[in-house]
Length: 138
Image (cartoon, rainbow, N blue to C red; front, side):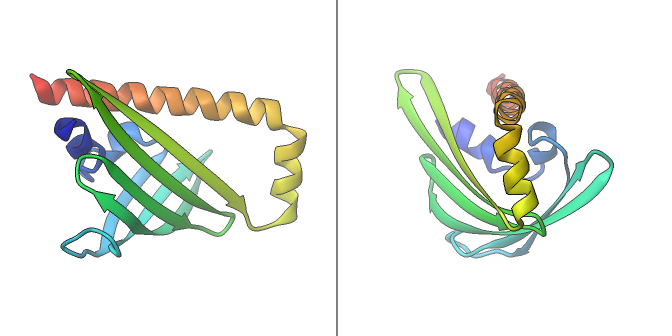
């Protein structure tokens, strides 16, 4: 579980498993992690999207939560890890809040496709994260 948590939070590995991430930097770091701020830049279909975030919860090896805000939407992401024997389970919860009405309407209209694409992207990113964790084990 410790290995998975360390890979999950290793900012030098983020670009290898977080979809479309091209830049990550801490703006301010606290020793206890909570309250640390950061900046992410994503490339979505050729357009750069910058988000600023803050770590809102951090329990080493078990729990990590952050909230990010960009021009189009806010994103809250929570990671919870549990262990059963030699198996670590990672559960991610994410909540998106759009700022403007048009994206909200589009999500409602295109909901089935958005869910399918999000699930596919989520599964792909977790497969990459799992591979990184397995590499660390070697």
